[in-house]
Image (cartoon, one colour):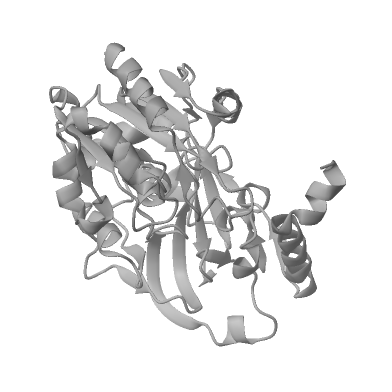
Length: 392
């Protein structure tokens, strides 16, 4: 398939193009916050400019000594390793805090429309869902917006209800607010239609207070809004972010001895399951592994369960994120499809001090790898587990 064929079949590209044209046709300007907002040197100065301002924070380094997986087996394993190393090459991100006066908040992306009719790319995931971040035509979005008095921290984003993205991409943003003395000084703006897990995390952080507001997905006009950029590259971990989250939710984890319990994360009732799970579990029987479905447990129960983990194994998915709660030295063996993988749990393992490996499987070429299951060779899984155990 040549470049033109790829382009014609890239619906995400066409949706982005259509959305950008729609934004301009409706009288709005698509831009980024650093291009529009004046920069200030102190957090106290953010509220002084008429439309808002931006405060650059200290640069954050990625995992600049990222080790390759301890073991990588299966079809296309070399391709996956090469992709990981390219995707997570050493880099330096420069996060920032922004403040807006009288902004409008709308859409599933928590999109911000400022008083100058700017639509900001930082609020919108640049994929096929761009259309959800496009302001509607006509007067409704501005004139009919509900006025909610007060100044708030934007503590949620599109993925607030997704367990893995919540802890990987949203909670680390709150660290930026805390470091600037804003986290508990300004009430938080949370989402009304959340999930028990994300609600429990906000309560644990002390953000779900009588002064906070629950946004209901309609259009709100606020007196002021603080926004935190991504702390680091989307869908990745750094030692700094992992250490902050672990200390907030399970103090003392880094001082615990290596866990002894062995867990298999089942996705039997979720997207991307192991289609031959019974065969895999039969091969793993000598290890006396406990099968768990973490999404059936409340947040505190997951933290307590995996704080005893010495091995976490299973198909790619939010359940592997629970290696966040394991003591350093845990073995993490992830089953991935070469048609859909991210590397997020590899960066997490490296950030915390775990030993990570993966096995690639086979996914039907006629089905969407985001939702369909895959098959993994039990013999490769056993071999990978043996290699990981020897690397202790």
